[in-house]
Length: 209
Image 1 (tube, rainbow, N blue to C red):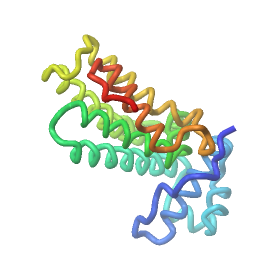
Image 2 (cartoon, helix red, strand yellow; image 1 turned 60 degrees about the horizontal axis):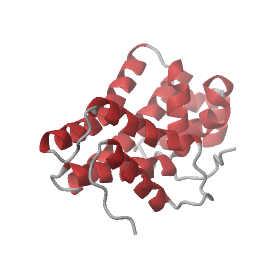
Image 3 (cartoon, rainbow, N blue to C red; image 1 turned 90 degrees about the vertical axis):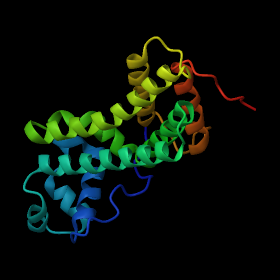
Image 4 (cartoon, rainbow, N blue to C red; image 1 turned 180 degrees about the horizontal axis):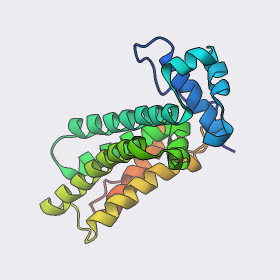
């Protein structure tokens, strides 16, 4: 069983009163009970606010889920973008640092990753379309790095699109089995998956001491 009590708050502050507390409480409720099992009353209780005040912020549970997942996607994308920008121009260090950043997010916000994977099916219409577009931004960034590496000769994979998808799946899957008390530290896990990613694109691997 995954310990859902660990990890840092996904939303630190939004500048709108109780909104951050409500969103973090919603994430916890969806993580514990799923979209169908969690109630707006559960969220209000977790946020330390009234049900009527909760509805002042979010008119429905689906809107609440959409906003939680929007924040999760935005934080993941921002971390990966920062890592890539700081990694320099070559594809290999960009891929390595992108994967490290992705894994760091999964470890820090494991419940958010699990909710993103399992509860997105309950979103419909524009909310779902926006979420898919935001997820595509992160996927596109990884695909661009793979394409860059193939073009430069750093990556030798003949399957760049499949390699990019595999890297993303590999990182996201950590949320299903990671344990804070496991044998690998956060940094070790990130480094291990960075090596996996470089292996998938058939890049030269750094020496492992």
